[in-house]
Amino acid sequence: MIVRTGVAALALLLGSSLTATAADHAAGPYDPNPAPLAPAAYDYGDADFVFELGISGFVSPEYDGSDEYQITPVPIVSVEYLSIPGIGAFGGKDGRGFSIGPSFGYTGERKASDFPELAGLNDVDATFELGLKASYEWENAEIYGAARYAFGGGEGLVGDIGANLIVRPTERIILKAGPTASFASSDYMDAYFGVTTSEAFASGGRFTTYAPEGGFKSVGVAASARYEVVPDWFLNADASYERLVGDAKDSPIVKAGDENQYTFGLGISRRFSLDLF
Image 1 (cartoon, rainbow, N blue to C red):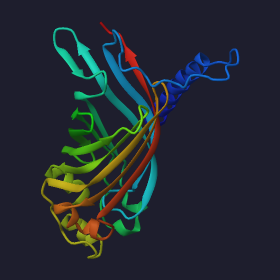
Image 2 (cartoon, helix red, strand yellow; image 1 turned 60 degrees about the horizontal axis):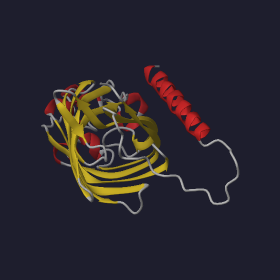
Image 3 (cartoon, rainbow, N blue to C red; image 1 turned 135 degrees about the vertical axis):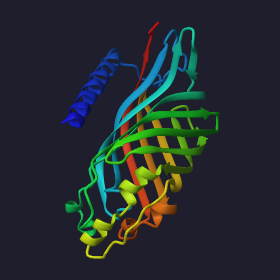
């Protein structure tokens, strides 16, 4: 219910802003040679806080190591620029330079009764992740890293690191692609990849007892495309391939599924700027 309410509120916010944008471009005297829509200016004037909100639909594995896929809504939340008097500024108004912002993650409940291949395993409650993401962007490249604390079904430290090459074919389009890797602590790994003695017995011997250690969970590549449709409104496409590695790959749960994991997302977002101080 909370997720549905949040998505509805976000959709209402985006819809209201889109209506306002359409009103700004309402019909007027006919111009046979209209000027093209200009991309959003990078100069936000006196704005102290520049951020982005949106929603995306993602196709992803039903659980880590699954060979079956599902479609889920995922919020888009990012902070481009924040200036705090007496402390300093984070991020750049042109999107380049150092930036730091929130990083969120959510993994839905894994119920063994929903997946015949997991019969005998205990259910894993939904897991929530909260932390920070930092990045540095140049004209044609960027590096980034995120660390989050996970709680709920899986607990511990999780995160990811990566780098991208950036191509800007026009002022409206940004393309990114590069390597990525994820990691998790032992408690988190045990929740999703471990098998207890009682679970091994309940599975009828299909699973053997397994206690994974923390470390790198996956490596892969990710790519994204971003198009500014009208000023401050964006279409976002994301795709990735990850291969589970280390103790995650060796888990009996993954061996019953697939170590190769794919995702694809398509969404819409809007940039906002506020004068806070």
